[in-house]
Amino acid sequence: MSELLAIGVSHKTAPVEIRERLALPDARASEFLRDLREHGSVREAVAISTCNRTEVYAVAADPVAAESAVLTMLARRAGIRPTELTAAIYAHHNCEAARHLYRVVSGLDSMIVGEDQIQGQVKRSYEAALAQHATGPFTNHLFEAALSTGKRVRAETAIGERRLSAPTVAVALAAEQLGSLAGRQVVLVGTGETSELAARALSPTGAQLVFVASRRRARALSLAAQYGGSSLSFDGLPDALLTADIVVAATASPHLLIEVDEIAEVMRERGGRELLLIDLAVPRDIEGACARVPGITLRDIDDLEAVVARNRQVRQAEARRAETIVEEEIQEFATWLGSLEVLPTIAALRANAARIAQGVIAENAERWETASPRDRERVEHIARTIVNRVLHEPTVRLKDLSDDRLHGRMAVVRDLFGLSVGEDELEPPVPAERPAQPLAEIRPLRRPA
Image (tube, rainbow, N blue to C red; front, top):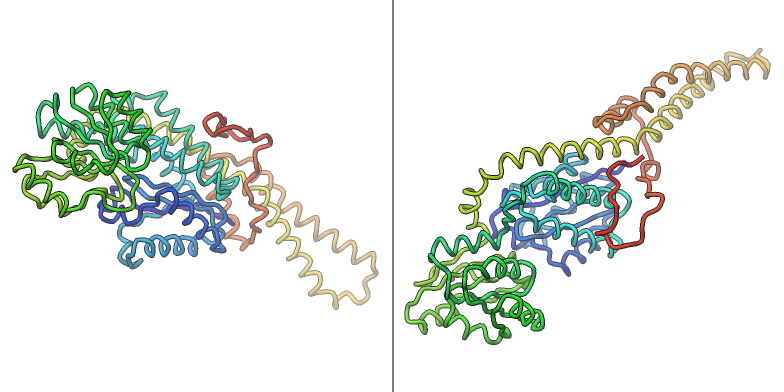
């Protein structure tokens, strides 16, 4: 049968030096999913890649082979031996995989508990896999239910009340180090969501914002107009570094944008005036060796943890409420998952019993040389009746099962009786009327019939 797998690394298991090598930006994620689905055991897949995690959710006929394939592919792309990566990799199966995704979407597994940026990132990753036809009934149900759970958590708890995110914590860290940010020149390299969140957090501080874009100049002009700053093309970055007090880098570039030799030259021209570099990108935009240049203070995504820790206690009570909601939703997912297996398992159980009965009849055929055809029919009828009566009560009870242990119970039944159920028989059903509309408008199937 198919199983759900979640395989990946996060800020909890790997430093940024490892995460950036495993990152799967849009183009690489599409290529990765295409290559993964060519692996015989993988039927559906979605890849999530953010500054704090890279995760692959796969539906696989052979979970052991699929897990090995994902690990090997990630290691190869990162230029790391699989054995070196195993300590950082985690793997979850079935309901544990779903629980992990639900917690991720709800902000419970984030560095900043309750941050809401992750929900949009997961949604976009799912939509990208959907557009690539890499998903299927199983992952569609999983991700729609997970996104619905994230919305419910934020609607029913105050876990995101302070709307903390990596950019807002970065601004807090800058203020902690430099004091008032009023009049400080902040250069924002990149024009994506992270840079906009940073600009939004910086705007009330009175800082002077400069937006630097390598490609999306129109976007930089728009942000500058919205937040009262100015904009530059990427060619203007070296000059901007000469006058900046703070640089916040948050692009999706696969290459370093600020290197140590360049920053050393900038610092010589600045006459020793200090410069704070904050790198929110994964892969990193700023070379780590820049931290060794006199006058430079470099902070990356992992350095935000100290600020995060001070805010974590505030959210503990709301996080507990959120965990309760996640568990309620996981029980529904577990019931749905188990329900996919009840009828195929019952059919396999009855077919197996019928084969055994027919086998016993065939083995004893030579002993009934004087039996008439009608006598043989009576024997076969008796055998079928015994099979039906023996299996009647188990069949009724299996059909009545509906708790969150259903999936595990079906697995036990198949294991006890040595049953083999074909992949097509366990295919998750497609919703009867799947709406043809954007994901944001789809009503998640949280309570399947």
